[in-house]
Length: 357
Image 1 (cartoon, rainbow, N blue to C red):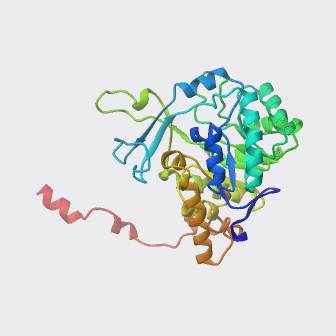
Image 2 (cartoon, rainbow, N blue to C red):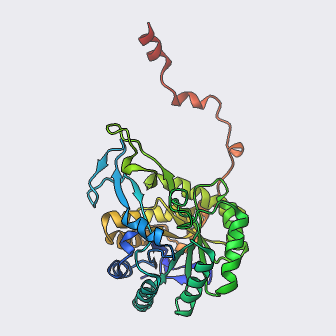
Image 3 (cartoon, rainbow, N blue to C red):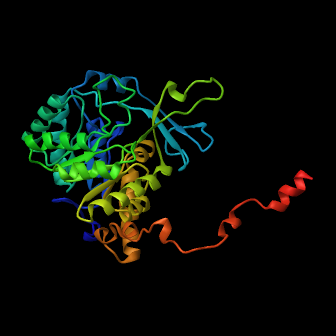
C-alpha cells in the first residue's frame, strides 16, 4: 500500500487512516480477523468491562434499519445508503480473561498484517477498569481505547456503562488511568453534549494520546401503528446524516486544541470519501462500524481503496489533508453580505395568494 495513506495517532503509525471500529461484528475472533485482512489500518475489538449487567444487555439487544420515512428495511447489503440504524447494543459477552486471551492471539495476526489491534474497555466501575487496563498493558498490547461516552448509560443498569459529560470528571478519569498504565490511551467521548471540545481538551490535558469523537446519540422513534417506541425503548441512533455533526465537533476541537492533537472521527462515515471529509475536518483517522456491520467487511477494503484514489487524484497524502477544511472555516459574521438572498429559498408568494383567492 502507498505511503501516501500513512497517518499517525500520537506516536503510533497507521498504514492507512481507516479504522474498523467496534460493534457486534467485532465480538468473535473470526470477525476481527476479517477486519484485519480487509486492510484496515487499525482494528478495535468489541469493548469489555466487569459488569454482568452490561453483558446481559447484549443478550437483550435488537437492531433495525430505517428508511427516510422511518419504515423498517431489510438488514443487509441491499439496504439503501440513507438508512438510519437504531440499536439496543451491549458489551462483549466474553469473560474478561477469555476476551484478553483472544485479543492477544489476534494481535499476533494484526502485527503480521501491519495493523494496529486496539483493545477497548468501557468504564463501569473505576477500580475494576484500572485493574483491567493494567492487565491489557501487561499482556503486551500496544494501545488501549477507553470508552467513557456510550449513549446508553442513562438507560442501562446503574454502573454498567458510562456517559461522562463533565470535563472535570473526564480529567479525573484519565489522570487515574495514566497513573497505572504507560501505553498510549485513546479516550472515546460522547456526542450528547455541547461541550465536546472541552471534554477532548480535558482528556488530552490528563495524558490521552488521542480522543475518539463522538459516540452515537440517544433517540427514540415512535411507531404509528402500535403507538409504542420502535424496539420498545430509547435507542442508540446513527447514520450517514451524522457526518456533519462529527465534522463540526472535529473542527471545533481542532480550533481549540491545535493541529498537534490527534483526533479520531467516528459516527457517520460510510466509505473512503466520508473518511476524507472527516480528515479535512481535523481527524487523523476515521472509524467505520455500522456500515461494515450492515454490509460486510468488504466495506473496509473499499474505503481504503476509495480514499487512496481520492488522494491520488488530488496529488496529496493522507496527512496533508488533515484539518484543511477546519482551518478555513469562518464564522457567520465573517461571511459576505448577500442582501435579500434568502428570498430565493422561500415558496413563491404568488402561488400562495392564488390558492387563498
